[in-house]
Image (cartoon, rainbow, N blue to C red; front, side, top):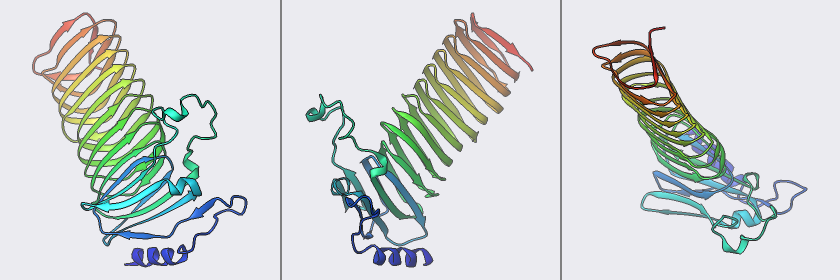
Length: 304
């Protein structure tokens, strides 16, 4: 109730479009708009976005920024989804700018500011090259980074994360499955996950806290994966010079496949570990029980 009152007050105060800075008359502050929806979709947004979480009520949104940037943003609700998208300009697919080597036409995150409040449990889908801050929605999350980002998300029920650019994406605890696809040089960090699947192609890194269930990690390139612990089946595959490090836990069973100079280090208890490693890489396992199946030429060490 308090949140709704604050938002209503903010909407009244922002009802008149005013310049945000005296030195930039083209900056406008939009009025708050209300929509009945339980899903939020942000598409092609290059800007600074803040998504607050409230206990109920409609979604509300305010769009501010340089006048031409605000005019390029479209906000509409359909099928219980609030969609916020921007006209595509200055992208590599924009033929009008193929030979424009200046940076004056390019969109910059600090030229657009979007403030949204959503009910707790809302599903959020983001496709961005900007900076996004999202609270603890405790709902499903889809987050796709296609350029540079420095974004933070709170706790969610499940997460599908894709990064083909650079920068940093930090997510809190994922109650269910965390599905990660990294194809750039960015860093993805998770507080923890129920179970995890990570595909890393490139030089990016994925860092996770405690994984309550199984984990599947596939690295092609020089990327890195690390986790505090795991409890369940673990499959680690490396083609290249990447690395997988899991500090503790029980891997039941543990399967490792290395082709190249990659390295795997597991600091917990491995059950019936199976290792297929060819190249100059290495495998380190603190302890195991059951049967060790080791094939290949890479160095394998057991114990401290």
